[in-house]
Image (cartoon, rainbow, N blue to C red):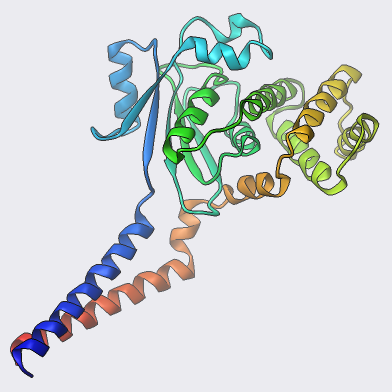
Length: 292
């Protein structure tokens, strides 16, 4: 083999190795990360939170103010519950298409991880891993503001103001339902209501009320009239926004698939083994060329 052909072949082999490594790296890389920090954290608390979230130096950090939190929550919960300080902090990481919205929370006592996931999906947030935390126990209501702000920045998109408001209202409504029904029943009720609204496409207030009453009764839940009215109002607002319920439901369902299950799957193992075999073959070929 002449030097030119040998050189070209080696270059092609090395390019192939680099391509495989690049693909493997792209598959294992969780994606771009943005962090939001509560404006009123002390320097000690800020350092603690950044260490807890394993934030790297190059990571973009946004600040969330108490005014921003009140802007989205004042209509739904008492101002005293929101408080006078912005403490909730979040880390949001873009994931692969179809992976869904997945939230993990620490020091959050009122809003559950599933409530965050459902509200974010309603707002149009897609395919992200989110971590929510605070220096000590907080309700968690203010964290949604930071998550949506980070998502807009990381994806270079804008969530309509109406969807941000609806997402916050949904989160608070579900948390309030959980106070009497328990978190699991409250979340399941909201999930089923979304499915029924997507299926039946109600066109009037009476039709929406019928769906809410029949769905709750089928679950063995007796809702007081004021609660039914608030749910009717919430879902009518959602209907006006022309929300893609199929996308919302799929985002939440996808988040139920745990990373550990993916890593242990036959498909993942097959990919890893195939990559190893390909790299070994390339290396043998390059070695044989140099030995000739």
